[in-house]
Length: 538
Image (cartoon, rainbow, N blue to C red; front, side, top):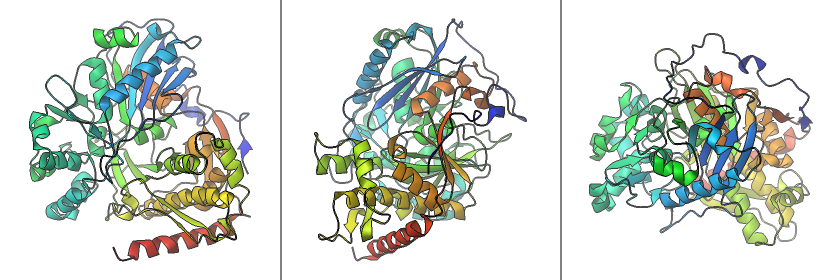
């Protein structure tokens, strides 16, 4: 059951328009003169699209939002099985297109923009030369080529050392990806002037300055939480030059000013600051006002994520879920860590089904959701493992592939397959949440954006019921969160908690106790199937 809550009081009213007790306002200095009216601009560098949002900082309302490409999704190139790449120039081209589309929207005055915020797909690797030109396509988050390199480092450096200093196995993260480049493309490595994350690349295009953040470095196992600096021991192990990594600056801070060429290209005022950057999942949590210990956020876009905030550097010994510095982490005064579990094959499975089963003229996602609901809970024994988008961290970085089990030609039709796919994604998220709960991260409520897979009532109710949580769906997205973050970094808000005026809950989805036994039975069958697949001979 989904309850409409438009008539409820704003969520966490004490956090809207006022400073949370115990927080101190950051000391911001501004190099620009505020104009009236003012706007904040957020960019979201996703793997399927570039999104842009324009926000009024005085009301907290979104003035306009766009995405590019608008009629399809950006491709993810796979030159070899298990690889995933995107040319950074593709992102920049669509940033321009999204900005142009914003300009055409009513009340979207780009000349009133005061600050820019950036969020981006995590764990990617961009290499540029001295002229700031990309040397090769970016190796993005879904790429599995560096799994063995990370696994070898986990053993060589010692699991205890890696978990205490990096909070994670080097796994398939950015540092291991650069080690792969050095081993297999030494000419590219030798020409590299800087290595960076996707959001750092966009900030470079905007400001001409190469910088990153401690939170971003932690996403790539490049930050030593014990020493509060670059993870030089890991870099030494890989034989990587530490000078390749940019200077870290605070997540909320003026990180560079818009250069004339970028201002002219985008039609924005010269000199406005880039004042925030964060990976997509920490930013998604920030967008949902998930900042304090015990709060959880979820997303179900191309990948599916549950993200929980804690105040201690907790880790999972097998590194099946990962812990990074959260956007509001202050190492001495107010430590904040974000623990993330990820299912790579989420919305991409739904997209694949739509294209494969019906093609371009097939049903909309809304029609697919309605068709899936025609099948009963458990899809009459049909089980889908959604792991078809690269190595899965919750499975120990195994690339298991997606698979369908229990198919009966005399029983199952398309509604069963569509439902089993949505349930399979929910089951995979529950599987990861159980790991987080073992680490002490749990909550009665999970907040998520009202979009992507959560637009399916079947998916939202199955998720709430199987996780035994109430799901609050809020009208926000990553680009809007990045705009709010820019307001914090530029000093328009005194603290992160002040940035959430205008953020309204849309619906709340409680667990359905009547459906719980059927979902528990289907989940048990799913976990049995997963165990069999994990234990099969390779």
